[in-house]
Image 1 (cartoon, rainbow, N blue to C red):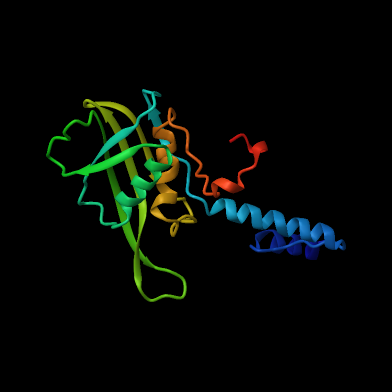
Image 2: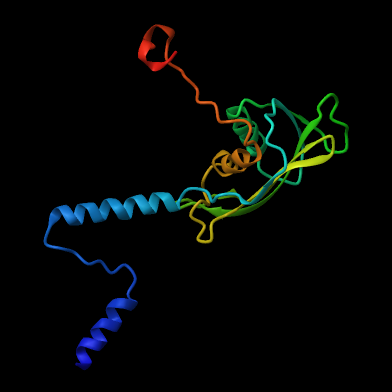
Length: 192
C-alpha cells in the first residue's frame, strides 16, 4: 500500500508526465490537442480593461509622438494596425497642436531587453502598452496590453501585440480584409 501511495504522489508531482494509450489514434489526437493549446497560449493577451465611449467610425487619427517608447517599430506597427481598420494616420510632435485633426491617439509603452533562444544579442520587446483615443480632448476609448503571465507572447511583433488594442478602440471600424487576387481571377460566385 505504501508503494502505491508513494508512486501516486511522485507521478502527480512530476511535470511533463504523459499517459499513453494503446491506440495510436488516441495518442495522435492527444498530441494535436497539446499542440493547439500550446500555439493558442503564444498569442498576445486580450486587451486589459478596454473602455469605449464612442462606437462611431473613425477615418483619420493624429498620433502624438512619444519619444520615451524605445521601440523603432512601435509607431509603424500601430499605423499598420490602424490601416487594417481603414484609418489613415499621421504623427505629430508632443506639445504641438494637431492641426485639422479632431481625433488624436496617445500611447505609452514599456520595453525590456532579453536574449532570444540560441542568441547572445540582446533584443528589446514590448511588455506594456496603453492607447488612448480622444476627440477634441475628450476620451473616446482606451485599452491596455500586458505581456502574458508566463511571457508566452514575449517575442510577438509589436503589431501582433497592438492588434487587439486597436480592435477594442475601433469597434465602429471593422477590420478590412485585403483582396490581392488579380481582377481576371475573381469568381462570379464570390460576391464581387
